[in-house]
Length: 269
Image (cartoon, rainbow, N blue to C red; front, side, top):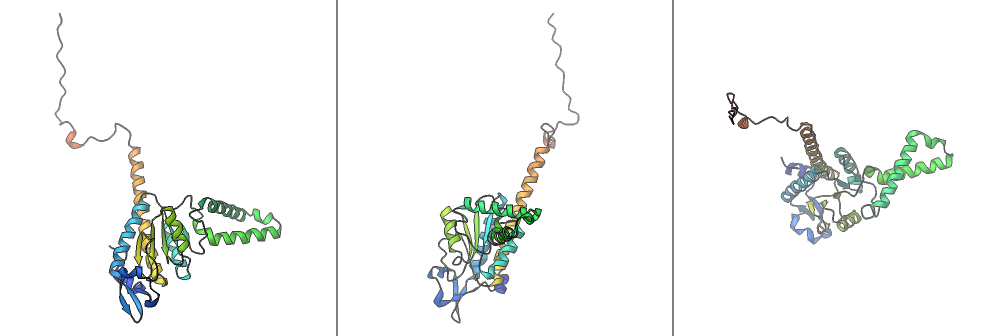
């Protein structure tokens, strides 16, 4: 079964591009035509592109890799948070902080600080602080949660990035490209697809379109993680078998009436 079907794409409005006067000529290969001054995206290509992107994500996560979901525009925020959380992947859906990828060591320090503030809040230790300091720390925690809450468990730079709207997330595209990270993106008719490794041509302004594409990427990630879990379980099971206790294949087993003959005694005398 394909990652998404033509019917799903049509129902979500993925085929609607931008006004013809606002297009990027580099998107010409992905455009089917125009209607009432609006570009119509060729969904036949989009179905194939989604299949390719889903296979890449499935293989990546099956090998233990991670995909960072990025979408800070209002139409994408909910879908990004929901599907990234569902698939156990990190995400950014409020604001992209400069250096999120290229200066990850500094970002990680802020993540550690956020974890410490969380600990103070959960343990109740924060209530022992003076009121002014307590309010200040809670404001800091709220801000950090907005910006970094989705990457709190990120231990290293992700292996790939999935983006909705490459124009809005141009800084994320630049940083990922600089580090050589593969980029999967929902690319509308007004965007530049050159820096994108896995282009998924489609409407990036519709909530249903963002939800459909992010959901398909999350499903692929879940499938990959499931394969990784099955592989790990099989490896553990193989390790539990003690050396020398493996069963002998039927073809190699001796016949029932097989008898080992004893050598005759040699008379030396």
